[in-house]
Amino acid sequence: MQYFRIFSILCSFIVFFVIIDFIRRGLLKEKYSLLWLASAVSILVLSIKERLLDKTAALLGVGYPPTLLFMIAFIFVILIMLHFSVVISILHEKNKILAQEMTLLKNAVKQAGIDPAGGNPAGGNPAGGNPAGGAARGL
Amino acid sequence: MEDPKTKILVIIPAFNEAGTIGDVIASIKSMAPYADIVVVNDGSGDDTAELAERQGVVVLNHPYNLGIGATMQTGYKYALRSGYNVAVQVDGDGQHPADQIRFLIEPVLKGAADIVVGSRFLGVGQYRPSIARHTGIMLFSRLVSMIIKEKMTDTTSGFRAAGLKCINFFSARYPDDYPEVESLVLLHRNGFSIMEVPVRMQERISGHSSITPTKSLYYMIKVLLAIFVNLIKKKNV
Image 1 (cartoon, rainbow over the protein chains, first blue to last red):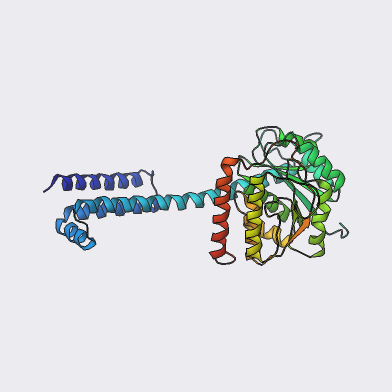
Image 2 (image 1 turned 90 degrees about the horizontal axis):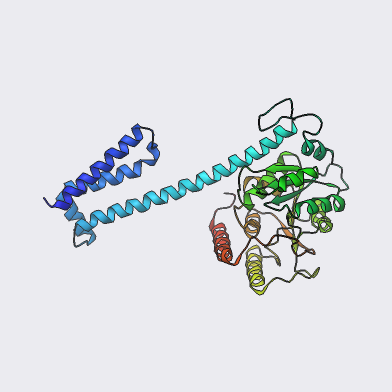
């Protein structure tokens, strides 16, 4: 067996079990681990089954079969990164909505005479406590 | 103005505008006393919020800097929830004179358009942008005019009045950054009517354009991309 295959099998095993361990420890959500696991399994299978690797390489016109392992790993890296970009965009939007809601709520709380900082609830209301709320209502 | 049920809100997005915000609010109060004012403070590091509060207007403070698009949208969300039927966007840097506000809200009140954009290039005033800036403004105006099949002269103008339908729409959907041009295409795609009126604008009292030369390339690419993606997107998505 060629050294690259041993190395490749070892690496995919490590990746697979590290990912499983991360899920177990709550560091990684299952949802975000699927692509990682799929990449580890694909590389593992192609490294163990030499004939499958050779056949697939021949089918795709890849002259040197180990290159196929690189190609597959690279495709998975691209997919994982694309997945991250999508997730970040969704998070960005949700985060914006959350911040806006908080801004509006803070104002509503203030208008109701409560100190949003949570200091002294009795101190927020009277006299000079709330110029924005009272005056703006009157405009 | 005439109808007592008409509630008009002036939204002032502000990021580090301590130098001008006081004068801007004061002039709106005297020139457009029929309107309420809300300042959306987008995480300013100076005392923009304090100066605005001292004038007795509502100040909405973002917990951190969210960008101009989200800042305008917070204003629109506030307008919607507080029951306003007209929202006017006025910059916090003093370039939008308060005495021009009535020209913007008039067509909205009459129902002539869903959104009214104040244009610097319809004969009033003498705004002279640099050649580079002028080229950019013209390019976007041509492009948007082509898309919405109506002549637009100043699509980058942020001096606007929006009716209730627009307030509703913007509360749900507003572009993140450099929103002016993109929002017009969005509105058109969703069946809103857009109108331009001539307004006079002032040179900035303090501060400078958010669009520096280095950012202008990103601006162009971002806005062009947004426009073209909007065109191939399904409506109402």
